[in-house]
Image 1 (cartoon, rainbow, N blue to C red):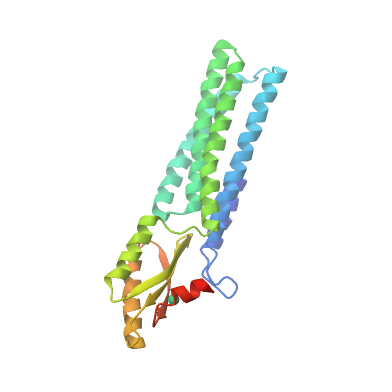
Image 2 (cartoon, protein in one colour):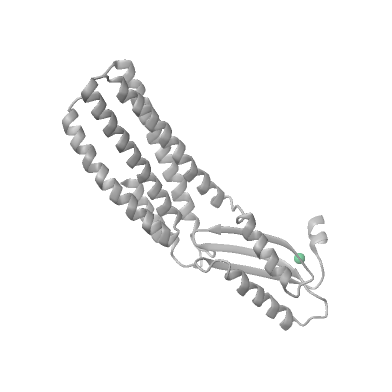
Length: 249
Ligand SMILES: [Zn+2]
């Protein structure tokens, strides 16, 4: 519940427009939230693993089996509803945080199912070891599924470039136009924003007006690659190839 509340504030803040203090917006809050959610899920997995170990060592007995069954069925139904709803919203918004939350509750759903299964088995057979084994399996599954959230959050925070096929598409768009060469193509993304910067090399005698017009055309075409994203494209107009000079610096 606390993670979801935190996510709510992450989404509200990440969607704020750029301002004097955050010139590139606050999109990375989403990645940070995803990372934190992954860490919290990992810790709950480790805690569950520890609890299973404790139960095994102390040989604790499961109590209130019938009440537990009713609780598990109710929470199972609530979680199914939550997962379906979050997945629907995640598909529409493509929000990293909501995707993370959907995954989080999906993990809960599977663990609820496993708990229900083990409760039924324990109440029939009264083999407490079933509860321990199921707990271990669930905790390993929880830790495994949290890895993706942590990994994806990290990539955005470290400014990983776009998927290689999209970078290829951008390169092809540039090549289709009246540009001699290009260099220093850099891409990254955060929340719904994609950042692209590149140097285009023009003929020395082209007018600034013409060169700028070609750049604008390239920008417009790049933006069409994904209409759902906000593209922030920064093109540097070079009158000659300065890439070698830049690299030697
Ligand atoms: Zn350059």
